[in-house]
Length: 89
Ligand code: SF4
Ligand code: SF4
Image 1 (cartoon, rainbow, N blue to C red):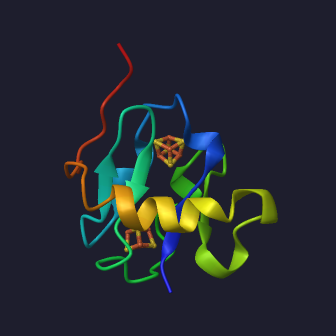
Image 2 (image 1 turned 120 degrees about the vertical axis):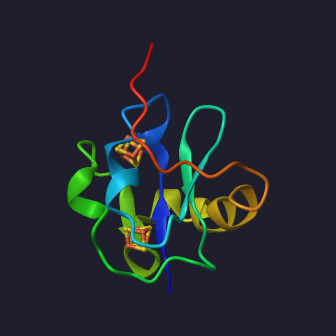
Image 3 (image 1 turned 90 degrees about the vertical axis):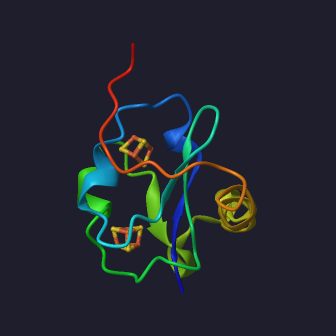
């Protein structure tokens, strides 16, 4: 199991979510973040940090956003780590 970032994250660069992650699992894509499923330990800390409810446990991802499960797995391997909050410019 892992946590997955979905559609509502697109365009958000508040990145409040990244600081609470004990395993540094967040990766920065072009217009959204991804979670690396290989390092996420399902601790739940990031859920409440996201103001737009973009993060779900993989078994609770809404039907229309199921493809984000694979997208997070793929894109997290190609994207740089982000561990500090970055405000939109
Ligand atoms: S706080 Fe939520 S919407 Fe913003 S970057 Fe993190 S997951 Fe995406
Ligand atoms: S569930 Fe925990 S380990 Fe996984 S991405 Fe969120 S804060 Fe990090």
